[in-house]
Each structure stands twice: as structure tokens, then as C-alpha cells.
Image 1 (cartoon, rainbow, N blue to C red):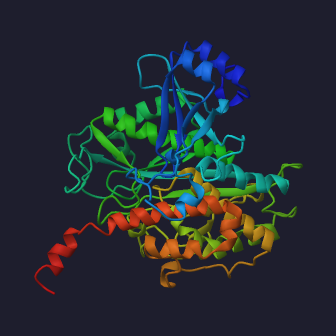
Image 2 (cartoon, one colour; image 1 turned 135 degrees about the vertical axis):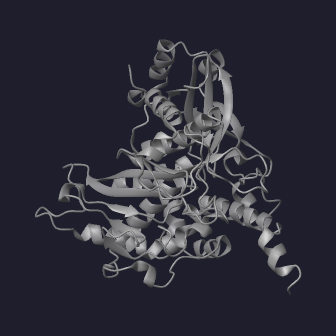
Image 3 (cartoon, rainbow, N blue to C red; image 1 turned 90 degrees about the vertical axis):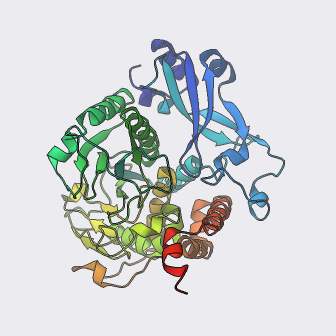
Length: 456
């Protein structure tokens, strides 16, 4: 077997590891933040255990590694810190290209002691949403576009970020949207990234220079949501590692640099009938279908309440501002980049929608679960969308929450999303994000000291 994506069983995985003479296995599980948690096991131990155990709270920590001291969180998480069983998904096996000894990385799913998926683990949430479509005879197809910044090394959090120095010996001082020469400044870096992606079988497509100084975008080929969430998870890890090897940072913060555009994870999405293979967003005559419009209606109805899932940090809301290539509402339109929901120019068989609301800082599993859940609710409830926005959506009012605190309130009040995504997940997620918000509110910013210290 040449491709890990063909692996179905643990025995298939063992054969794959043997062919590559793997001596160590990185056993990974994505947490709420999208951080790779887990253990590094000798090959023999991995084969013997066929998985691992970790405390159930490992996938339910804040970005600072904290947990609430009390509250609804412990209605879901056993306060005695019980273990969960982690089982490898053979199809996710990849070689780790940046280590000397043959090492594999394998993403695991989380199960309780009765063999049920842990409902608040991000991968479990996406699996569940995909199963809802499967029950309808539909296959979601997605294609993410992921933006990120390259910056000079910065070890002091009180120091502003700056673009890195390229081959010319100079850093970018102006915006270079779609500039080929600006990308070529970092040829050695991107050659290594592409080489790593090739060795890891990541289906990356186009690389472009985005609007911001040092801002890049990578596009992925379309595929199944779980497969692509895995690839985005692994890609983020890869880019950060390779950037460090080239003496710079790669960041997926939504708004890392003041005065520059934020970074998004636009997700293109369509639905295919599993029996016929037909794109159900188009009628047989090529016109948009009712399902296309109902899907838009679901996105418009539920995205505002779901924003905390895809704008997960206080920094995320700095990106969502007028005239910054990021949406401020959930208007929809054809080939219109000022709206939150864009329908790109495409033939009927490739008709799709682009969710432009999601930030690059979002957990890819949660992001895909969120947008598919909103669309699913639109289909089930046959929600009609608002009229198409044919002009500048920035001239319309804000229709999204403006802060993490507000977004969490909206999410808590939307029972339809709780039902589709799972009550346990919503409880864990909102409790963790509330904890992060409270931690941030203890920090006094330079703006407050500059403008309030002597003036109020």
C-alpha cells in the first residue's frame, strides 16, 4: 500500500509502518484549540497498545492549558479525571518529514469506556455532523483557503510583529497582493513546505501572496470535510515547524498586525447526492436549486449565533471590520467579496458557496462542523435566504457579534445549534471560552494606559 489514505484497519497501518521502517509514532489528538496533544511512543509500544489513554480533559482545555474550577463544565467532564481511550485512524497516518529517524504521526479518535465517541472532542463533532448528511443521502464537499502571516522571530509578547527579511535582505514595507516576486523572496521556505506537504500527502493547491505585508494564502483541493480538517490540522503544524527552521514565525492569528488585514479560513462547500454523484445545488437545467437557497438561508440564520465557534478568541473580532477583506454581516451574493456568503463563478456542476466569516485561528474540525451544521439546519427547516446583495455589503449594518463575550451569549441562546452539534460540546466549548475571556479581561492594554491613565 503506497497511500495512507487507503488504510482501513490496524493491520493495514502496521504494514504501512513496516514498509517505512518507522521506529517512533507520534499519537496525536486535536484539542479545542487545534493543538496537537498526545504521546510519542516507540513503535513496539504503539503496536502493543493499539492506541493510548489520556485524561478526558486533555481535549477540553483553554488555549493557556486551564480548566474551570467549577460549574457546568463538570457536568460533562468527570472531576475525578477519568481516562478516555484513543484509537488511531489508520487513514490519517503520515511520515513526519522534519525528523531524522523514521517517525510517523497518526491522528486518534477519542472514546469513552463503553466504546462511544467522546462527544465534545472536535473530531467527534465533525464526524457527527457529517453523519447527519449521510442519513440524508448527501456527501458534503469542502475546499478550504487558509491565510497566514510570516513574521520575523519575536520572543517578547510586548513587542510588535514585523514582516521577516527575505532573500533580498529586506523586509516588506508595503502590501504586495498577488505579487509573484514577493512570494519568491521566501522560495527556500516554500520549497520546503511543498516538499513536506508532498511527503505527507497533503492536497495543497495554489500558493498566493495575500494583501498584507508577509501574508500568504494556501488553497486545498476539494474533498470530504473530515479528510480536509485533518489536512489543515497537519498543515498548520507543518508551516509553523518549517518557518522556525528558516528563522521566522508563521502565525494563524486572525489579526496579528495592527493596520494590516486579518487572516481567514474561507471554506468552499457544496453537496453531492451519494446515489447519482450530482451536485444538488444545481437543477438539471443548470439553475440554482431550492437546496442551494435553503443552505444559504441556514447559513444566514445560524452563523451569527455560531460565531464563537469560528471566531474563538478576543483577537478574532479585530479582523471583522469594514473594508478589510473580512465580512461584517451574513449577506450573500454572486462573485461579491464584501459579503459573508459568496457564490463564486462556476459551472452548474461546480456550484458552491464560500463561507468568508471563518478566521484562520479557528479549529478546522469545529469550523467545518459549524458551517455544515448551519447549512444542514437550513435544509431541514427549508429556510429562505434574504435577497441577494448586489452591491457593497459594507454599507449594510453589522449583523455579527462584536466581541467574544457577546458571541458566547448568542451561542448559548441558540438551541438548534445545541441539538445538531451536541449539548456536551456546547457546554464544554462555552465554558472554556468564557474562562479565556475572563483571563483576557484581567490584562490592561497599552491603549488603556496611553489614553486613560492621565485623561479620565
